[in-house]
Amino acid sequence: MVEIRKPIQVSEAINRVLQHSRAMPTITVSLDESYNSILAEPIIAQHDVPPFNRSPYDGFAIRSIDSIGASGNNRKQFNVIDHIGAGQLTSRKLGEKEAVRIMTGAPIPESADAIVMLEQTVEHDGGFTIRKPFAKGENVSRQGEDAQQGEQLIEAGTIVHPGIVALLATFGYAKVDVAKKPFVGILSTGTELIDVDEPLQPGKIRNSNGPMIIAQLKRMGIASKSYGMRMDDLDVCCQIVEKALEECDVLITTGGVSVGDFDYLPAIYDRLKAKVLFNKVAMRPGSVTTVATVRGKLLFGLSGNPSACFSGFELFVRPALLTMMGCKKPFLPYAKAILTEDFPKPNPFMRFVRSIYRFEDGKAYITPAGFNKSNAVTSIARGNAFMVLPGGTRGYKKGTEVDVLLLGVEEGVDKWQLQ
Ligand SMILES: Nc1nc2c(c(=O)[nH]1)N[C@H]1C(S)=C(S)[C@@H](COP(=O)(O)OP(=O)(O)OC[C@H]3O[C@@H](n4cnc5c(N)ncnc54)[C@H](O)[C@@H]3O)O[C@H]1N2
Ligand code: MOO
Ligand SMILES: [Mg+2]
Image 1 (cartoon, rainbow, N blue to C red):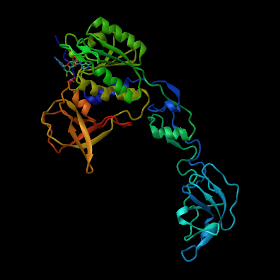
Image 2 (cartoon, rainbow, N blue to C red):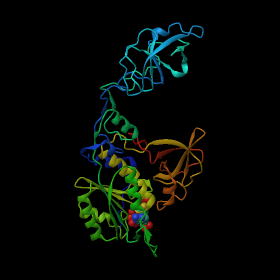
Image 3 (cartoon, rainbow, N blue to C red):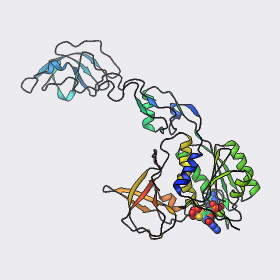
């Protein structure tokens, strides 16, 4: 008798996976290595930014009091007593009608309180004149205007993107505490599989899921170990899965999760006494996606069908890995867009249609990325988003506003937005 599986909703499946996503330990890495990690500590301003009042322009530092009454008919004259660039200090104190020639980024002398841009001056008698008064604080880039010492600027659980790297560098974080990245194993199962450099043979296809998942992980900055391709053989696959579970924090298998005679993953879960969190999700593609745990480690049984495999990764593996690293925003960013063509075929399950999202004339549009069955590989190549259509009995008309999940975006969101 073929096992009849009971599908659960996508949101419930995600919840179950996240509940079993165990926190990774904290490690300290150099700033250079921190990109794409998840911060294990908040970023606290170690000092004011900027750390001193500085000039935002190339020009002159003056005492505003000396500019009172300046106008086109009553130009005020200043004598230049010093000349500093960024990185230099002046030891001079400004007296009446004195100025320091100063460049962008240089600290403003304590005795000055305004900056005049070079363009606002006319050279005159070894000094310069101005034709308008300057207010106290005018053109001053104030100490602490960007950040104040002690302020928490970024919370723990944030992904380190280039802007975060800049902030860390600003405060002298030569080393930073981040979550250790899970080490992920990948095993592609299927007697039909041949390697990328092999010629096609009757009945065989090249393994595209393995390289795709390596790339999906790389996009997250996560290293993986490939356990290669294995024939549909229960003993062989079981041994490899056991070995991989010893070496890795998480294991992803592809193929062999359905009810076919050579789909051995269910038997492998039995042998390993794995706790199966679910083996059927009310989604298309990827309904057979199975997630289990063995000794607390997550085992993702992704479908062999390329589109289903891709979707299973983005919807379950990605948020699980991010949650393990303490990321506060593990979900794909959500948007709404206008469907550009009819999508007539209804489906009882929620659909994740590989699609092209684009912005034009201030509006967001979504177009299915071509042949869109579970076994499609071309639409995952063309798409940059999922169009998400709720399950039901009706199709969708061109012009309808639909839900979209964006792919390949650095920072996600903190909530799963779909029911
Ligand atoms: N009687 C039923 N048959 C099927 C059901 C079902 O509910 N009842 N579900 C279908 C659905 S939906 C899917 S999806 C697939 C899932 O199959 P498996 O996950 O068991 O994967 P395989 O059978 O091993 O392979 C499916 C398909 O994908 C190709 N494949 C496998 N690995 C790779 C790879 N690494 N790279 C590229 N392509 C791969 C494989 O050759 C098959 O064509 O089951 C349906 N059947
Ligand atoms: O698991 Mo299948 O991908 O629903 O087509
Ligand atoms: Mg199968």
